[in-house]
Length: 142
Image 1 (cartoon, rainbow, N blue to C red):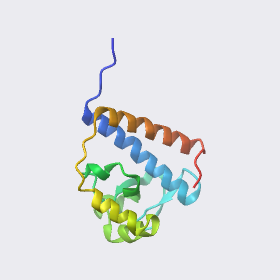
Image 2: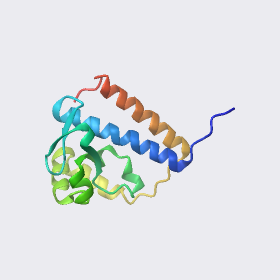
Image 3: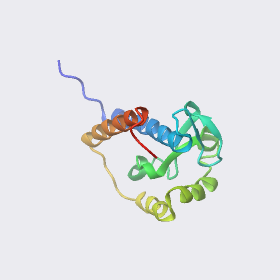
Image 4: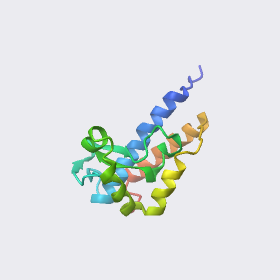
């Protein structure tokens, strides 16, 4: 019996899980050189990997930048959830991290009309599974 295909909504949710994990791992490694702790981009709180979230600078409702690695960085729950991203602190730190030009690009790109296909989601899921494995295996340097 052929494997039942996931709906687009379920593929999007699955991609979000892998993408968010990748962002948290990436930022932990970039900060401390290990997979176990990282800092919040907005408030500099040092937290274990499990307590970090993948916080979007431009909200994830904008599909054009939802899975843009420059738009998403490790954040504590307080800043991401309770302070709605703590954007007053997020933006200047993001500029320091990725440059003003890249922040401008994200802000402009959010208005692009983007539609992902089933294949796009499936390909991105596989890409982020691969990127996570590379980070966990120590094959990526920062």
